[in-house]
Length: 112
Image (cartoon, rainbow, N blue to C red; front, side, top):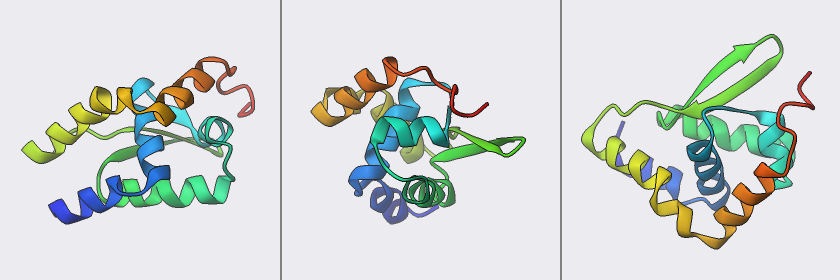
């Protein structure tokens, strides 16, 4: 993976918000991410696809549902960016609001 692709993935506000949420949870279902972000499933899935293609997130299938998590680091740059997702992003107001909203939701209730 090229560093320019990683940084391009970080440059989009929706993808940044997704990374922030995934950095706060072990894994999340697409429906949970949609609920927290207030975005449509196609939009969230499209952004998750970009993050998956550059190696920032992993996906696990469980029946018809897909669960996303941060991917393991594959390079020193990737490792640094993942550390930033888990710590640096915690100070961005919009991401703090997302995490607060996430804590208020009954996660995965909609998936079953």
